[in-house]
Length: 104
Image 1 (cartoon, rainbow, N blue to C red):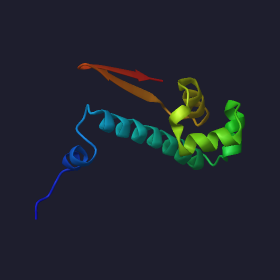
Image 2: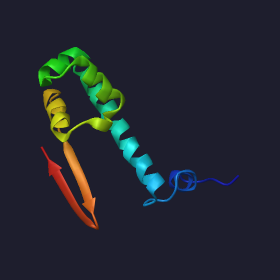
Image 3: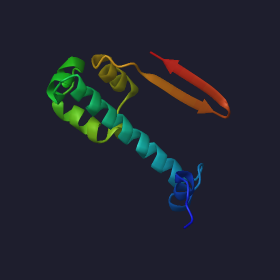
């Protein structure tokens, strides 16, 4: 039985890195992970969506939308959420072999 790495399967099913379909998949995956991180951290801090919303000045419905699809979240809102959750935030950006890391 031949085995395949995750990278090989992704290359075959989604396309190689740099392909627009693969880039879109990776982008959506990252947004999904951000939403899940918000929800998990909120729950670990024993906060309801409404309580977190009050901490950052948004409605419960916006917290719910962000937890389920962080696609339309501004960087400012994201930072306010994680600040309210007392979470350390680090962003990593890679540009043509140049790596920039920003910590808060």
